[in-house]
Length: 228
Image (cartoon, rainbow, N blue to C red; front, side, top):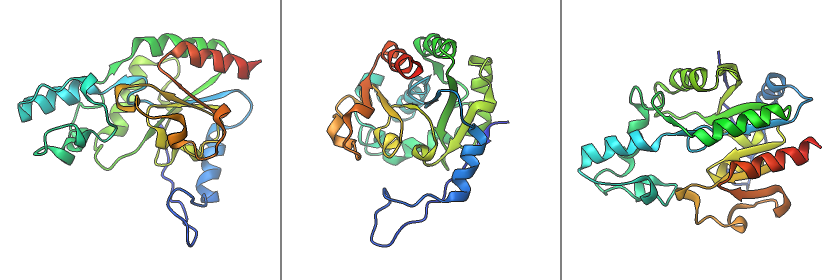
C-alpha cells in the first residue's frame, strides 16, 4: 500500500502560513518511512510524469463548448484560463472516477527515471492530497503499478506539504511546492509555469539550490553530480 501522510503544521504567532513550525511527530513518520543512506530523489506526479491535461481539457471542452488546448494553459490557476461560468468548478473534475487512472505517461520521464535508478538513486513519487480527489489514492497507486512496476506503489507519498520531506533533489512543476525544501529544487518547465522567474519564489535566496528546466537530461546531470 502507498504511504499516506497528512501534515498539520503549527503556526507561530505573528507568522504567516509559509513560516510554520513542523510538527515533529509527523516529520518523524516521514523520516522513518523513507530512511537514510542512498541519494533520494522526490518526483511529483501530475504534470511531471503523468499528463492529466488531455482528459481534463477533453471533459471541460465537452461540457463548456470550448476548444482549450494544453499550450493555452499558461497559469497554474487554471480557473483563470477557463470560461468564467466554469471557474473553480474546473477542480471538480479531479473527483471524477478515472481522472487520475487515465493520465498519459510522459515517455521521456520513464526513460530518465530508469537512468536515475541506474545511478543508484532512490526514487519516491510525491503527490499532494486533495479533497477533490475522491479516487485519487487508489487510481494513482494503480497508475504507478502499471507504468512504474519496478518502483512500485509503495514508493508513493501522499501529503500536503512536500517541502518537509527529506531528500537530495525534488522535481515539481509548481514552484510553491519547492519552497522550503532543503535539497536541490528543480522546477520542471510546463506551459503553466513558463513565466515563473527564479527570484519570484526562492525564499532562501540561494540560487545554487534551484534549477528550472524542461529537460530530463539536465536532471540526470544534477543527480550525477550529487552521486559523485
